[in-house]
Length: 555
Image 1 (tube, helix red, strand yellow):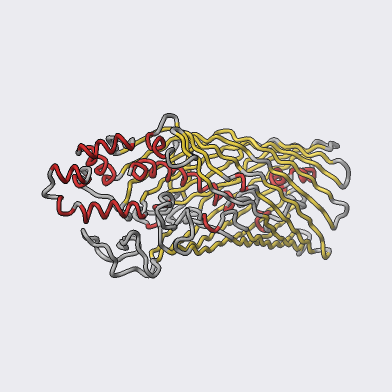
Image 2 (spheres, helix red, strand yellow):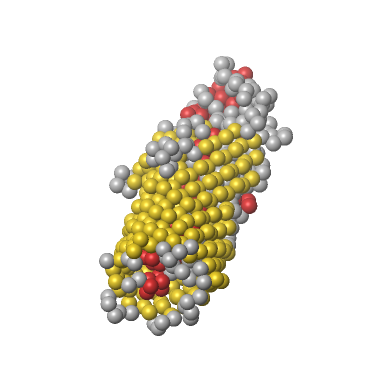
């Protein structure tokens, strides 16, 4: 009971606060760097675009002459839909009156749903951002796409073999929110994940006419924020509902010392708990102001028709720090109060180490060890015709580094003191969570056609293989495998000025059958955490659309 009432809201929401990294690091990877790269399926390691070579392959900076500036603007629209459906025979400890998928009016003593919905729908209502100065999430105006400016400058002195550059860009920005009462809110009503590189000193050296080397250092800000409702449709919580409604029913108005002693005072609770009731809500925000990393690149171009490039983007180990705030549901508070009202209940509390009181709200400090994963990418470009160039890249990201997520608290947490008896991954001041992610390889292809001396047309395609195992898929991470399509054009106004326009569309559909994911809908007494839709079929449909413009000019 203690585990359910105190550890679950705390651990559940902190786990959730880290989960956006898992999805959006992959969902958002390379989506907010450069619009020309998007139009080429991010297959640009051998043909890095302008100052954005800082990220894609810093060796490509040697192509810049004199002073050049790049300014880009992006409009991003997230469309995320989640569906929940009750399969045949759905129940949690004999109860099926889940208001998410049941049309019946809630009544005391009701157990079985007589009128299931075809499916319940959850929709993203607006983008969300975490604002460092305000230390909180804010909602972007509903219906408006998210706007993001990017900028950079590079300089190669006359006659020099070295090019210097720096840029402001966002390796990862994603966030969304839903309206109150949305069925998807039990895995995040508001989510925001940001990694913004605010300074990236870079240098590239032209070894000879065919070979260039480059390096960059990224100084980034990292933030993760989440607001979520909490519930635990689990067999153990079903037992508590059974005791409250069936065992305690006859004693609600006629309680006596005998019933208090035999039932540990549990029947004195003015409100019970159940598998479909809310256990409260929680907000978590973690950040790190300086998260350094580096990129190393090589570019080899033996001819005008062929080029080879590769880049290594280092990992970045961080210790995010922040705050959590829990609003505990009344049912949990009442259960602990009721136990303390009985002699046998108080003895049980002391033996098990249960708290004597659960406050309406709790706040505290928490830190999280997180490794931003390393990435390697290599590619080629080849002119199959004088006016037609094809690019092809393969890449690997070390998501297997997310074997465990570890959280540390600034004080002993009584819930963890109890939980450490149940798991080797828990101490009185820390919590380690096994994730077992994998490191996938992916590829992308791009095509650029020179229609005229001034106009270039581009197409790109990048299938994205998920790092999330099938038994870890979930609705907070509304993506498994994905496909990205890009199209764009480049126009040269004069020898010193280029304009790029791009439209990109990414889509991902996922089907999570009931009882298949330990982070969404798995049943069983050993799946207390991270299963707010236990026993339900879950489907997700995610669409991301980006419109972008880039202005590149030499001075």
